[in-house]
Amino acid sequence: MMLQFPIPYEDELLHSLLARFGIRSGNISKRAILMDIFGTDSFTACLELQPGISNIVSNLPVSSTISTNQLILHNSMYLFYTAFRDEEQAHAIYESMLDEHGRDLHNAIGLMSSAIKPHTHFQYCVLCNQLDMERHGEYYWRRIHQIPGVRICIKHGIWLSESSVLMRERTKYAFIAPTQDHCSDHSVQEIADKELLSQYSCIVNNIEKLLNFKYPHRPMDWFHKHYINQLMRKGYASNKGRTDYKRLRAEFVDFYGVELLEILQSSANGDSSWLKLIFQKHRKGFHPIRHLLVMQFLGLTLEEVFNSDPSEIDGHESKTSLPKREIMKKTMTEEYRRQAKRERREVWLQMRNDYPHHGRLELRKLNPKVYAWLYLYDREFLMDHMPEKLPPKAGTTRHDWEKRDLEVLEKVAEIAEQLMSEGGKPRRITLERIQEIIGSKCLMPKHLKKMPRTRTFLEQVVEDAEAFQKRRVLWAIGELKSNDESLTLNQIKIKAGVSNVKHIIEEFEFNSVY
Ligand SMILES: [Zn+2]
Image 1: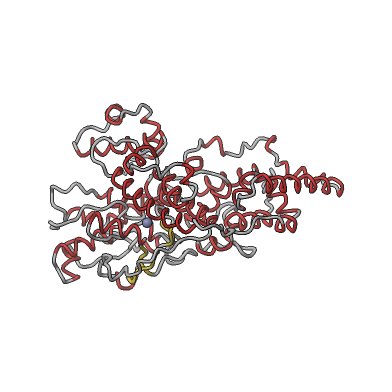
Image 2 (image 1 turned 135 degrees about the horizontal axis):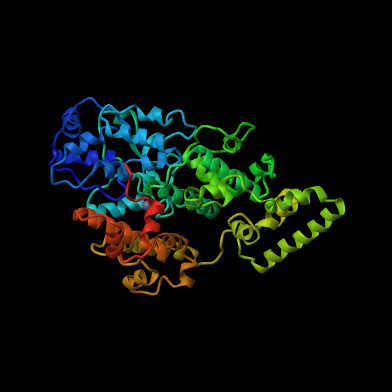
């Protein structure tokens, strides 16, 4: 029986929770701790998808409200690793996690053989750690920071640091919680390349969504159809499905930048690169990160892909969506090309003139078509007329603003944490509320312009109407559950004060079907 079992922190990895239990139990024998937790000292270690969850829950005190479902969905990486698997596979993994003799899930999900290698050591964010120490008096391992390829904290927009705790070998029979000694690097490592930060944050945001929401399971074929349809819409593939991989690859690499693709272990080099394979039929699974890379590049959101109607994607591409590029290519005579070049150069120079302070990414967003055209057919001109990569801003106040940005960010992050963890019925998190608590006018738009970290952070925490509705529905479900009330749509509706509850629940299937 585990009497001192701790309450999980937000996004805490099960490994961390069990480690904190080990410390509280006062037991120094690793085997005795395993006995307490699993009721047996034979166990299979899998940091991402720990088996033996049923044993853990059966060893909790009767009064504990922690369920197997909760541990699997909120404290393991189950939702992330099964997001792109079909119902049957996902269910089998879920069952294995419940079972004390669960399969070696490392192999089941191809973790070790995957092209995207897991971290060797646990990762942590210096600023998150600071906040945790202030709020809880201890550190813990967050799930999101241990996902392969994740090396930034999107909450704080800084690089993660590497702890001295190995994620595998040493953790085979022992659960290790982070300590000051393990996380001795306190330096805040900023991300200088803002384009990289922006693209990277979108990817990690989606990873976070996959970790936290239960999207409907779809077969691989489902994603394939979505991708091919979008390739056609965007003019990378003809309506017969012939794909211009050369252009696709060039624009893909340009979109993310070589550095980010390397960080995500997803450089798309060579003829048999994953970027080509993922668009081919009947391929086996790909790492979720690679799906996210493709989706973001093609302009598809998770909601669009997972929640679409089967008839929308079933090969009914209308003839009218025949890519204009294909037509243009055929009819592009020398003269036409010269004129097209002239026109596009003019547009580009005009944009440079109108927006002298815009960076590369911003200009590209402003007119993606012209950018893509020049990139393909007039690259030399484009490179000669690009803004400097990250021009260092001159002026004496830049340093002060950087310092101010960090200070304000810290305050804002603290306030946001407080607001998120407020008891009772949720109140919407708005810029005005945060501003009010801070008390000064430091969040005015003209100030925020100079504080990119605070601005990015605010964009993530401030809730629009939809996000707020979702949080209320989640809260209502939690309340009803903990009061043992029945979970009907009507009850949730009344409790949450949201009318379109059904739609929200369907979208996320908060309530696991298992
Ligand atoms: Zn952080």
